[in-house]
Image (cartoon, rainbow, N blue to C red; front, side, top):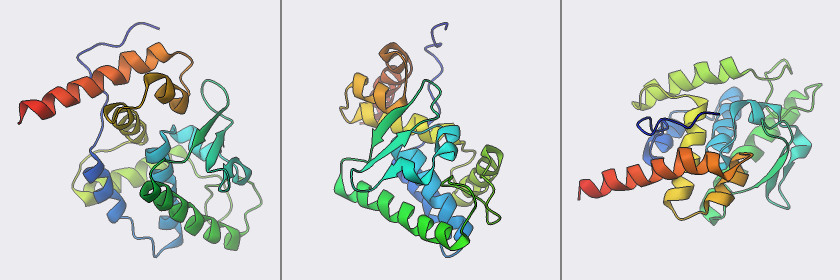
Length: 196
């Protein structure tokens, strides 16, 4: 794989911008509870949209606070829930609200994220929903992969080791993480300090 161009930062949003997006998801409605849980999971754990949509109910372990990603691009991995109590509780709450709705729908498949008719949710449906939420939140065009980029950049910016971030993201090689995200975290830090 050729090295990533250094002048192209991964597209991310700030935590405040993502929180604005989550605020516009009206969780009074069942499908919105699903979307809220899905996007929260992807943002907090750095999952690719395909990995999140391939999750089965048994892959989420609330007791051990981890998610088993079995359909990852680079093989299977285990991703722990966030370490801070607030974030962990926020993720668990969103997932449990959705899983309650899902159990009422009683779908024939074991996929976590399904439609009302029990079909697996598609990545195109997720992308369409995100476009709507991004516009409503006033943060513009957002994509599922931006959730992953934001997670990785935030982890590194807050002192997580590149090896740990690499494992969370499921990169085969820590060099991928370093070439893409460590440089991005450094760039974002320089930009922030330049405004001081």
